[in-house]
Length: 66
Image 1 (cartoon, rainbow, N blue to C red):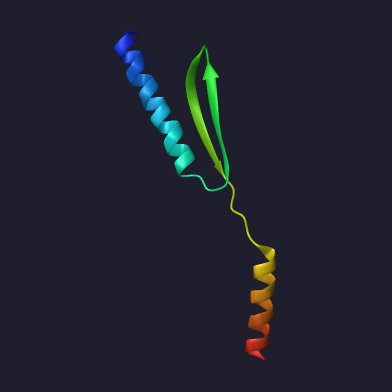
Image 2: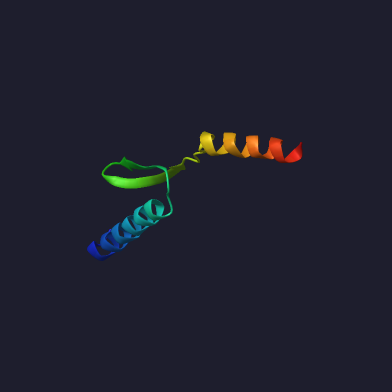
């Protein structure tokens, strides 16, 4: 692999890692490396719910429907 090809590949990997981080609100990015090369990037996203707001909405809906 030529030096130019290595640089291009490295830039593509870096850009993909940055894109994965930018798209994430809550979660993690896992980078898998084999023989010193990035082989896989996984993005795990968490969806969080504020249970206090849900309780208040449920109470308000119950009151409004009666």
